[in-house]
Image (tube, rainbow, N blue to C red):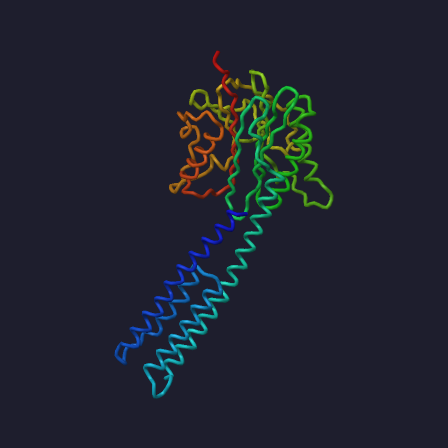
Length: 371
């Protein structure tokens, strides 16, 4: 709270400092116009003062500067035409200043109203993200974890990308996925899958049984009464992993999702599935038999999970982000440090703005301490 108040005070001081610029402009134009020859009229330049103020100030600041501009134009008219008080030319300029000033004040009011609405949208989206997609714990059993969600839309902090982790008696089960589509429908489908995963990941005996249950959950949702039939149109790509606490092989089922990348001594290896399954939600059509792949995850290794918002991120020339090429040789062993560098490198590649949401998870199996 104190930080917000301090920031507000700094903003008020900055606005007061900037107001000096249009006020100085009004004074300069007024003095020069009064001293200039009779055939030279600089009064129309006063309209720049409220226009400049609107770029940084609110309606009260703009209204004040506009009133000063009208007063200055009136003073110029009186001083230049003392016999006629105000000529028709000066009266027209005053009316123009009043109209422009009023328009700018209305514009600032609407802009502030829009800013408040966006603030409320961000607040709601952040609250929704904390409920639907909270950050993963830093520690999951013996594993160290870091997670990050980058939204493509500035006003939205959550979309169709998803991830979650659940502890079991012998290890950790992870899911990372991406819902086809955007908007509230995608958020709804992501929340449904995450709820099903969190409720069943510790109860289903095998990884294949868990994925079968998740696929049926998505299919059941698409067939809900009163809902538009979206079978075959809505699906969720996902990778589900079972990471044992003890050293050993990680089990994985890939449902049409980009493969994880394992980093060992700075060398990345893509963990491609031998027989990938169709995305979740298409099981009723494809009736898949889920094949469980496995790979070694040894002490000191890092495991990177991500959504296609990473690999499909394009630079200014249209080139995709070359994931394994970029991260090869990185020496960061801490998941937070690795993820921070990954985020900076990805945003640098795209010029600071993603075209699609991106979720990233880094998992480390800490190296055994030396004796």
